[in-house]
Length: 200
Image (cartoon, rainbow, N blue to C red; front, side, top):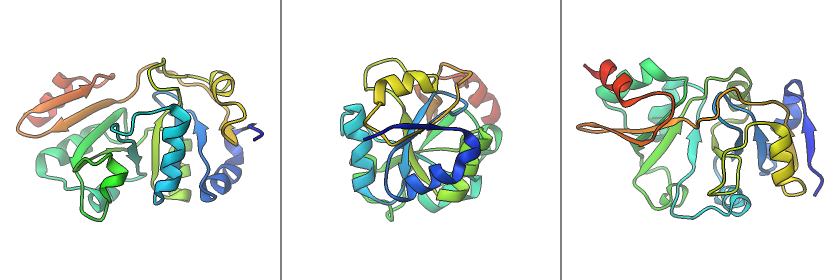
């Protein structure tokens, strides 16, 4: 497989590759991402294979708008406050998923991680393609990749397309579950204190 690097202006080329069920890599406001169009377990499996990722670890669902979240997960008043304060942004919320999402998409879990990226290109891509399953572009257990050259060196010949660019942050999003208390599952730039401040 030949791997091509394209500019963000060539978004239609990116859309076409995603519509055909292929994996693409692209920069976000956190780290470089690997993504597929949501809706096929076959597409998702390609990400697990590429990353050598453990199937017990779920992959995040990216959506373009706040109102999209309730299509896939249950949102209470507490969670709404967090969504309104930090989304779009560097946060992934772990929410109880709705039954329309097969457990196979969430590694057998009854929860789903959802994120709205704060990146104009990625938001535009999501508007055109629809929701995507996205994870960091790296081999599991290795550091996150931050620019197109690092991604090319790692995935050359294994994915069809990489969007050119580099990430300004070297931290993935904060992963948080809001229940009776705020549980940080992965620390990013958004801290527990910031979230608790919003919930006061």
